[in-house]
Length: 86
Image (cartoon, rainbow, N blue to C red):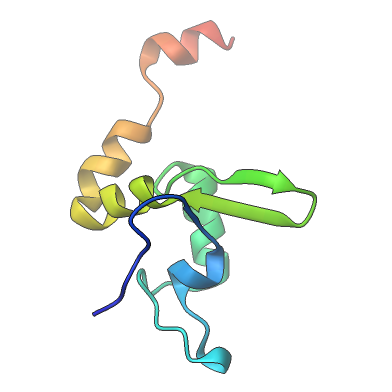
């Protein structure tokens, strides 16, 4: 069983795994597929802590694992949000 911390943040290698260092994947996708999913809203938004440090909330990763389809649907902008950006 893959363990996530109770709260806080996780780095990318903790999510997609790292075979070189023996870290199993929580969500088994490639790095490029993960970033494409973040850009499209399918995966949670990244949080930048510094110029070379990007993390994700454990709560958002748990929500994605529990119900990937619902997470994807809830992260899409609504028609009102899109109209406001025009």
